[in-house]
Length: 128
Image (cartoon, rainbow, N blue to C red; front, side):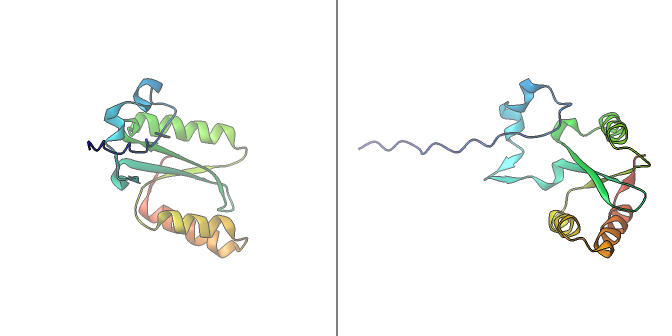
């Protein structure tokens, strides 16, 4: 009896819209995924805060789309979309960042928003 290898579930790339669509499904981009887990070093998050330190927008760049030009372009787009004064920070992905983000977003406690904004301002860089 000949055993055929099991088909692996294909992980869909959901990166930046700056990346051409031809690269989104290429085998090169799939190498960033290892056993269903995302390679943490290949993703940069951009967080937009308003003047009262609430998160108004979140985007990310992944893989080959991580460049200074693309970060500036995405930050300017986030500022244009959100009315009022908006400050954008870029932060590298790390374990625990998503959990801290979800704690700040789900709760209506103002102190969680301030703590997350302080954490991002210390760990990240100010884009605009």
